[in-house]
Image (cartoon, rainbow, N blue to C red; front, side):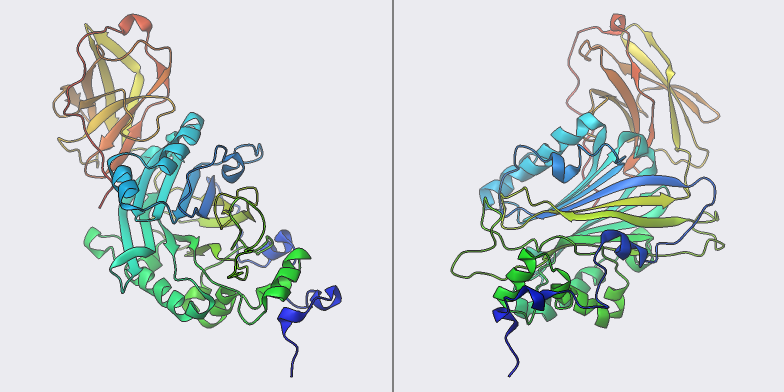
Length: 483
């Protein structure tokens, strides 16, 4: 009879086997097919992805490490944040529906002073997905669709499943999926079934959006609940204590599934060089000491699938396409103990040759001037831009939290004073704007595109322009998530 790995305790038995997975981040990344391109006009965007099962906990006081706020070497442009098991009790859920949930508010409080704006979110019970971008990218980010895919209780309950945001970034299609799959080591087949179901439900034909498998990038992450099979609890804990993670990799259910499933194999993942992220005692770094003594596992994962396009083949706009993603770091964050899961982050460089490099609307704050209580705003539009009577221009303080966080606004159709050859002028009332030395921005919001079509450079309003009279009317524009 073979020895039970759960009884092995001799460190000499735990040495990583030759020919196994790489034992360093650099060597692992060298094995990935990341491409090589040195052409002109390539833009690099820093992307930081967060996944965390928060076990119904409230946000901690400090998330600087999770968001890499103190890393001076990072130049981030996008945050993609996915949470699982948010408090979804009926009272909490109704409160979060009427107001911002505590986690969204916390992230906005932290990121908005750094000039990140929340551009989209989707919530399904305990699942939450948020996307933040630096404000100057707003005219090149189009939210195409948000979707919830429940898989619990035969597809009728959202305690398990996935939430998706589909967007275009500089002309490229990107789908972002945050998921929570079924638990327990014996439910591996069910996890793979739910994975397939979530993917199959990403149907965008009615919106003229390509099939998700034709998108340039799929970012898929969450509490995937894959476990370490066959190995005993004692052996697994010994490997973790001695940081012999390679002895556990070959029994990780996700790695095994990737070898057998052709579609899953197309998704890449960074090397697992951090300890399993589940299951911990709350408020500690100790693995489960309860009666159940659950076996540690890498349940929290970040995957991506890149649709590589030959550089000689034109993309959607007829321009040569170049689009690649390089993983820079893949880590867990052991310092956070509010949950029985540790958060996991992935930091990427997204390099692309923009298919769209000029905004549809160009706002000109240098042309601002006033007539009595009104500020005259000049802007030009691309000849192909389709305007709507429901388009509007918002005035924002630099550091805005989201697109509804305007100081004042003007309906373009109602307040236009002149236009010619795609050049327009509208006026905005200044009487309700509080006197401020802050810097401001103007954003043109397109109702047809459901996104910002143009943004100005920051500017200051001379204090002599401020007049304090009536308050704004109540018929302000409200932006809801694209359904």
